Image (cartoon, rainbow, N blue to C red; front, side):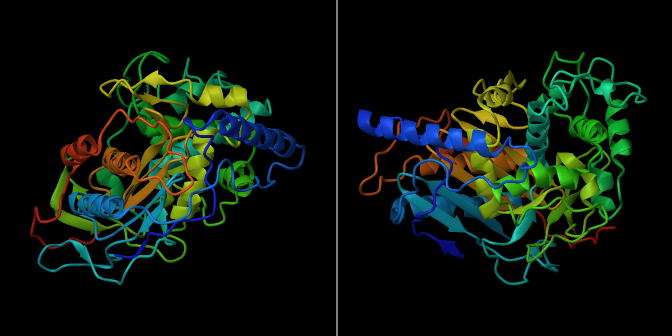
Length: 462
């Protein structure tokens, strides 16, 4: 395992300490007010949409080392996550402002299949600065671009999609907001088998949207929550039409440049390789019923980002996702009223009452973020905007799906809340509505192809 267990003097985007003494609370309130004033002066200036947000935001990250007990628990949880995912490697980071940080990259790149088990092995060690596809975590970025455009009055959150896509049938009554909140009523087409069997094929956004429009609706627009990546693709088409800009430029202008995300990109559909050093991405083949076939593991590293587009096509790194997760949770890029719009949540049918859907991302108790999936990679990012606790994790096998990655992130977060307080720091009152054991149990429920479940040779993809 490659791990960095030292503290860091850099900062996260934490918003404060709920148990600070009155004088400390007052000082931090002034810090927050100063940051907010600075952002209102910098971000909205005409012609300055790419101005970089000053770093760091909020209180300083504690220096020093997490306790041996916490380190052991984090290492064990990540190792368990790798095994349950059937992954050859993982990259993870936990930042605890009152205690320290933990970075880890156990396992191997997974450049070949073991001839006996078919599982990914070999290729050397991972490092924490490697890139990977973040999958459907991209949706939160896409919806934040929508919110930035709404602030500029270029679009309205409750504009009908048909305002911008005047010739597209089947979208009557659907608004831009509903596409981000997954309340449009659109379905989720079952295309995973096609994606993983032919990963290098280019998928036009309209084809994916048409598949979603042709799937049975879950209800009328605005009535029920149901995830629809096709709906996010429809949003992407509408905003491209509204702005006359492509999405690589929109992400760069409104997100990547302001946050200094220099290792984050939105590759073109023709760019099949993950930029820079990266682990290989693996997944199980999918049978005709949409189930993972654990006997047929596929290397889908070379993949067209068009399989996910603006719902899941971004590539990033651990460090950049930390910055993004903190900015998303704290609303760093948005005005206060717009932050409230993003986090006006709706219930997710079948999920716990404390897990709710905002615009592009989820509220899980006090934490905000999302799980991400795309063939080859699972990831998740969570941040508590009040304390700054942040978790980012990736495994290089997507068979288990985004909920598994979110479960793993929740498990790491629960462990981190128990970290011993560093000298000179005050531990906040941070209560999560789940325990590490709860999250571990859900990981086992959602695991699709745990290591050791099959012993069959790998079948090459596409």
